[in-house]
Image 1 (cartoon, rainbow over the protein chains, first blue to last red):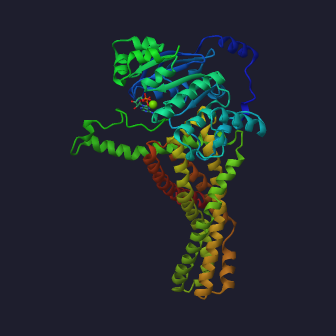
Image 2: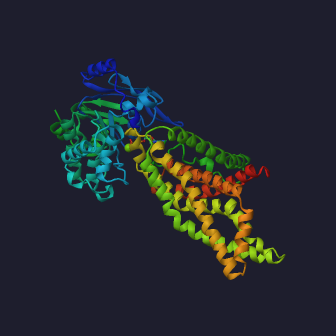
Image 3: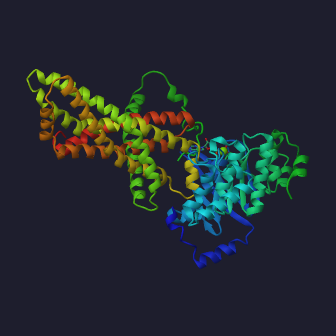
Length: 278
Length: 284
Ligand SMILES: Nc1ncnc2c1ncn2[C@@H]1O[C@H](COP(=O)(O)OP(=O)(O)O)[C@@H](O)[C@H]1O
Ligand SMILES: [Mg+2]
């Protein structure tokens, strides 16, 4: 809806945003509840998302990770709770306010969700054409710059169906961050990929963070990969946060669902401590 | 809005009581309630979607390029099938009417009756049924695939309203293109009837055309065009509704496409009666 793209935050609002940017916590998720009918999926989720870090949400499948992300990015409205970004409670926004703030967040869906009626170039150019008044030339430069820095510049003319899973994910990342979003959410970015591609995607997430200063939220159920990339881990267990903190702290747990999950994944604690970031 | 396709939740899954065998009054009551309530709920869903479409259709940005794409898909893409069915419907109508009218010596009226039948009924109804099965089903499949592969969610996260982006252009294109196809159907149909009646059945060409021109007038044409417009909007709305709320992966999209064609056929025939009764001011 490009017609309100001209609406800029007021000076007052801008000052508040600038101040909020000093806060090492980028997003406060507070007491999120969500039910479908009488199925209570999220039962009061609370955790912090660190600015310009990799924040992993991990948990067994069916624990509510995707549902949580749908609330955070406001594809759905939580029944209860707050999502505070730059001092604004995202969970309570409606209509045009929501649309404006939404452009600060991008999401890379599990199946990439590229528009299959558009080429790679048009997919990545889409948010720019929708929301900016950039000229054709500027759009071309920005899109090619993003594609090249993600190593897929050569594929700009291809159709999504012609790309491998790993390449599709790169295009999806390029599209999600082409508007200079601050927060990027990845829903199971490595599930179903081969080990080499998993590594490439992990590197991609770290690179994107460094190059463009974004805050990443990564959903995963793969223990080994998580400890390699995470600055902070939140463990979701049947709609509740079982643990949240630095990877090494989680690895130290000797009982409870987190410990069970680590044991079941076959990754040794020594490996985790040795390979985790920071 | 169901995000990605998931297996039925515990709440949706059948409980042991549901599988209880034999007759029970409760089960009968539930079946009747479902039979009566489902269509009402469906109409509610369509009404809600229609109100969103009307809300977004007047708001910029006007996606003219998307409209042209859809108009081309619905219109140009259907020319052949609509023309072909038009020809045969006209031809067979001519054949039947001449045969029937001969019994009481009225075969010279054939041109007029074919003209009225085509303009008021056959044109809009057949055109709409053809467009629904060709373009409507494709719309459902396309939008349904976008739904189950999260492309619609991707649009939302990019702050693009999916109703405005996907449904509005198809809705407007339906309203614009089906009347044009209707005119095509009627023209070719009359040509088919003319050929059969004059060349094969020995009706005088002058009388055929003269009767037709004398009896078919503007109100007949308008009635047909109004129907075609309403059907055009309906086809797109129902097709988009089925795709937009599809769930359950590729199989779910297949079922949605199936429903799209069935619901459209029912809607077209029911609306045809309703509009006819309203226009003629009788029969309600
Ligand atoms: N739209 C929905 N309607 C009803 N139940 C849902 C819906 N989406 C998810 N659920 C249920 O919520 C639970 C968590 O799902 P999800 O967040 O997809 O799990 P995961 O952690 O694997 O991503 C599951 O039991 C699922 O069946
Ligand atoms: Mg999931």
